[in-house]
Length: 133
Ligand SMILES: [Zn+2]
Image 1 (tube, helix red, strand yellow):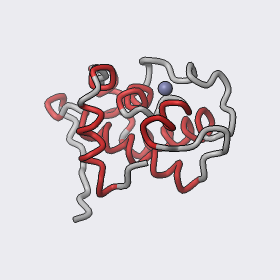
Image 2 (cartoon, rainbow, N blue to C red):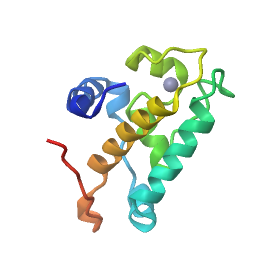
Image 3 (cartoon, rainbow, N blue to C red):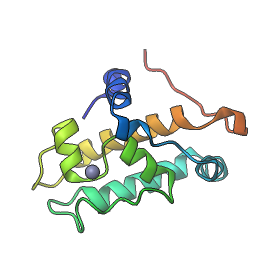
Image 4 (tube, protein in one colour):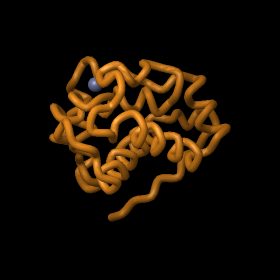
């Protein structure tokens, strides 16, 4: 998993993938984020990662993440965090073993960073971006 210092590099790498870079937040996604707030979206993100990705052998692995319907799902596809084989291929998260809580948080941080970048500020939603350095 990329850590916070290397998110930019990771996003550039994803941007080179035709498939990954096609994923965008819809107007409905942006409204949902704006209505719920980032803390709630983050909690949903934590739940999805814990329940759908973190087990050693997740249910329906490879098909557990819908293409749309929640901003986190869109982020998961855009960030190659949609299933265990994409996590292994892109981010070297080994398959067949549970994902540790620390690593789950790293995935959540990465997905939330993508969501914050992707949310359209013109819709009236102004994300708060914390810069570490
Ligand atoms: Zn996948």
